[in-house]
Length: 134
Image (cartoon, rainbow, N blue to C red; front, side, top):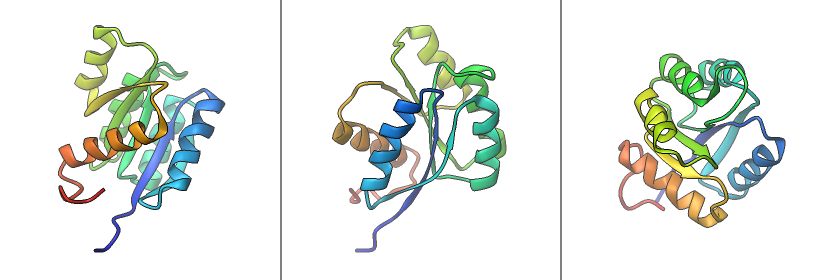
């Protein structure tokens, strides 16, 4: 079976979180980290440049926040599956991100293996991975 390698964009203003997410992407043979953004503007620009399969977008970030980043990524790279990531679990914020185009919401602090499984699940929901992969 051929391994499907997914191109990942990380957008988070917290350098520690970017480092942790990047480490997960670099250690998973099915993921390729193509870009990291610190704010919404950079996330949108990098999405347009790299056309990643998956964008992990922090809800709270400079430049208009995760909603603006998500809307911009959807416009720049409509094929990119967007996953919202945040410590804030308020219903309003989750709904705002989903309305903007995120396919799911993941709470910061989940274990690396759980995060990887949730990312794969999100991609399957978008029919970008065959059901048997993973």
